Length: 467
Image (cartoon, rainbow, N blue to C red):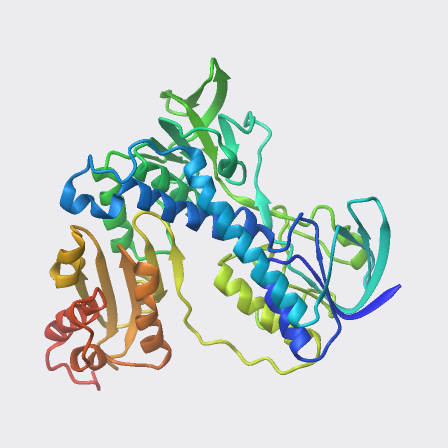
């Protein structure tokens, strides 16, 4: 029986970062991955595929140039599912090659197979050829990720009624699509297909969407979606879904009927823990398959077993999962793990992008912090005109007492890149004067920071810091 200092189950963002970190500390590390290739959900069905699909759709459709040439403008007149998939395969091959090289360079052992606990320190791995091996680890990191939630009442067939994993394998682009679930995944795919001129209807039982994002940003986002004829049926629930004659009919709880070519069910994901035999290790998952951990060390209730990434729940970002895996691995092998910076960015790769870092205006109000906001619209920048942008909004929130930046929120082209300027100022405890007094490259969208900073500074006036 092979013995390791750390066994990592799963090779997604949390697993690979944790494994490499432990290996760099001189530990003997094993990664167990049940997929055909390393990379986990992030590389094969989640983060990388969806963002590649988005970029391909925007490029081939000419979406970014329509501000100049009109809504009928296309780079490629007839876009097929194969066009989208071709770029995806090239990207995935590159990601897997990089990851395999990282494992080899850092001497991380890895095997393919399904892992399950035999006891708290022993795992059984069933390989593809049926061979069964047993391995033991002084510590174990569970980074198994999630899988789509598939309720029994939804007639999935992989062609007209699909989950988010199956969407990447479609044979033809639908003329119409209903997306059930206005969470991050649902919104990203709904807006991507809308950019390809598919008629998209978004349905969610909740009357609001993206409640963790600043309300003003969400309102601007919703306006942009409706402006391009996306239907948003919020506060409505699909009670019945029936496939018939190549179409799908939905009956909503208010009596409304919708007929569409394709339905994407994207209402939640489940932790992929059902095959791990958690009971043998003294662990128990919640009703969504997620594991509870100490938020500082990512240790479970079994001291030498850790969990990180999407399997521990919110925020379920590739970026935060990597950091969780790194911290968990350091703690697992007895190394010091520094607490990460307080503020991290959240990116939603919809069309348009949304990115946020720090406190929302609603959170500032709840904390009774005197504040002022500064806003810049991308069309106010010269770069925005050059790019043909009619939309795009950057919002910053400042404390009236300390003049420090409290939050930055962006919706529009390049939002997930632009947010890092605000993130740095937040974590370095910068004030409104940073944006007013510093020089930004011209013409750039980053100039929106100066415009928003000046907007806030003008409103704040001569308010003294002691107030």
